[in-house]
Image 1 (cartoon, rainbow, N blue to C red):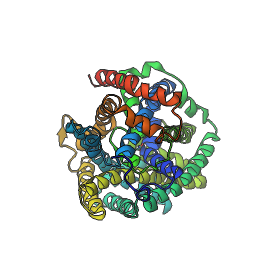
Image 2 (image 1 turned 90 degrees about the horizontal axis):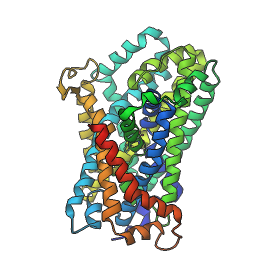
Image 3 (image 1 turned 180 degrees about the horizontal axis):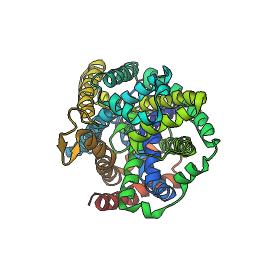
Length: 453
Ligand code: PHE
């Protein structure tokens, strides 16, 4: 079962693998979602809980998924049943994860379409001509147009398909190695500009000052959902990327680098956004309101520099979204490919279905034609957002970690952590195994039960 696959059909180097997995992790979740969730639930108070979840649950899951993937060289579903042939029902955990991937991909496509549209509008100067009070209407108008956002989504998706068809090493790994450093450079430039604006310190305080009264059990569940979403764990993407890992990759070390990179980029994003928002006398809003209505006002108030700032920011968001969407598409494509479908057919099929769902969901947004259609009191867009943000990943993560900690053979885990006995198993590995068996599942159960009730 183990390591049958020739490494040429996987990542070529550990560095490439780290870049690809970090590319999956760093996405809209870091740049758009993290800063406002952090501010909303009490800044520093949220951060403390978030750190705990990232290192004690998220990173544990990343390690577990990598191990499951590399051990079997299979996609979620078959990977579980290969490790536990006597209990084939475990494969449903993998399939459940893939369903979550599909829903996330649909949401991702909508937002990426808007973002690409805004990038285009800042490049062509359309955004800079809109008066401050016009941005809310502009966004509503743009998002409810039947065709325009869809065209941008299709362009975005075509690029993803193109990369996937290039293959794991020549497509995904190569693009990630190129895009991730560009993303970091863009982000650092934005941070420096934002932090040097007069009055920036208020934004820094908003992000870091601890206010425990704003946290509550809702904030704790949000922190867990965000930690899993941001690290792309709990839905099997990292099982697929794990199946591409080189045999000599040190799994725990790579998981740590990816986690640190993801966390750092989330914090830098907050430092790029909030100081500028406060310095320009705006109030931080949530989600789409922040990115498409408040930030353009901030950019416009900064004159010519603001125009550049705006181009850089939307480009940054598009690039971050790209490598994440690629990983989602890859997980689903690899799954169908394993079932015997050609990679190209699989990629096109998944893309078409995802675009269909994303168009339906985007019609339910704002004043769209489906906005009055509600399920459990939520529009389709809101329902998808809620399911993929706070409900499905924690449930899937819990099942994954129980499988890893209690049902997977210890020898298999030891063999993967030590790279077949070529590296020493130190206290750090033992500690992480302990977290996987006891701390992570118990913490997940507590947060899920209290948060969902
Ligand atoms: N981690 C990505 C982000 O933060 C989202 C994602 C989730 C990507 C799950 C792949 C799988 O935006």
